[in-house]
Amino acid sequence: MGIDENNFLDYKSFGIDENVISFGKLVEGSLTERFDAIESIAEKNSLKVLYAMQKNRVSTECFSMSTGYGYNDYGRDTLEKVYRDVFSEFQDPDKEKYDALVRPQITCGTHALALALISNLRPGDELFSPVGQPYDTLLNVIGINPSKGSLMEYGISYSESPLIDGRYFDFEDIKQKLNEKTALVTIQRSRGYAARKTLTVDEIGQLISFIKGIKPDVKIMVDNCYGEFTELHEPLFVGADLLVGSLIKNPGGGLAPVGGYLVGRKDMIENAAFRLTSPGLGKEVGASLDMTRSFMQGFFLSPEITKNAMKTAVFAGNCFSRLGFHVSPDDNEQRSDIIESIDLKTREALIAFCEGIQAAAPVDSFVIPEPSYMPGYADDVIMAAGAFVQGSSIELSADGPLRDPFRVFLQGGLTWPQGKLGVLMALQKMYERDLYDKSLLC
Ligand SMILES: *Cc1c(COP(=O)(O)O)cnc(C)c1O
Image 1 (cartoon, helix red, strand yellow):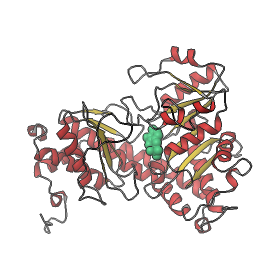
Image 2 (tube, protein in one colour; image 1 turned 45 degrees about the vertical axis):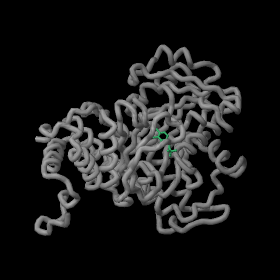
Image 3 (tube, helix red, strand yellow; image 1 turned 135 degrees about the vertical axis):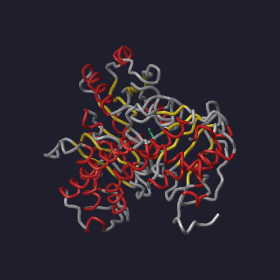
Image 4 (tube, protein in one colour; image 1 turned 45 degrees about the horizontal axis):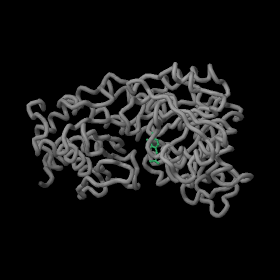
């Protein structure tokens, strides 16, 4: 193929057809306003992070590593203050209400959520989800799928109220299901990989007000995965008690190689810390090893990185809806996470799409993804991911089960050029195999 040296390196050099490139240009040109709005959110969130870093006097000293018990780890403690201030949006000047736990010992998002639940619930309590069934991996944690060590095994029960049409709160049902045993309410912000709607921070606020109006003392946790920095506010701002998420998604900024976070009410963070390490030890131990610099720098970059992922999602949604595919969210919906789903209609299209995403990666671009069996899934699943960090989904990635409507979930993109290349490459692979009406390209 070769580089067109007269024109510099461009998308053509990656083997993308002129028709696809000009279609991409056309779509991108129509998105100026959308991209400006996303820029503006990123700018404000970046200032929030920078302000918190200055206020907490982040210094070179923070980046020295601790080993062993990790006593008096100044960098770790400072990082946790920065997280606390950013996600509580400086609502707690006396530092009495909120705290944070941001650790490499929290192995992933599921672990962070499991930790939050099991440390803040006691035998006899009930956990309640007012937004339907939670993320797949939590089914084992809760015991909906029987599992060793589940909440159910410890005598913690569970109830849920499904979203009506995957979209609206069932206030009547929620009221009925809140009972004297209900101790903790879990609200998942992002749709994850379900057919439901992603909740905006505003919608989460309405739900929290309703629930606290009925049961003021109930603890409210938000699974914040994929949502961080996609809006101007985070759910603590609208009354949540605890936020939980993964550092290999938005807040790690692509630099955190591992980790999870919890930010929220001080007593709830203490419960979690006593469970993560040990009763009596809590936050005082936990060596940061050599992680603090990448956690801090990743958090610093995160609003900008999240912006690139959002632009990629918006671009993909617009390209594919013009070609006649059902996409979600569509252009009229406010976004509150970085995920775009596209119903590709055929097995061939889903495979071609994932091949395109893989071919645009900085790592493992030469690999061809293939559908395969995954534990816990009824159908074969195909995944595209060429990431610096294994399983990182703030990096450009796509996956979907091979069943009707052959829905692919696209997320991430550390840089806009790579996100754009990924979408163009997906369009190209489908173009080559005649998987959409080419006359729609112009
Ligand atoms: C990713 C995710 C999780 C679980 O995180 P892992 O790091 O994959 O364990 C939980 N909830 C939601 C909404 C997620 O997107």
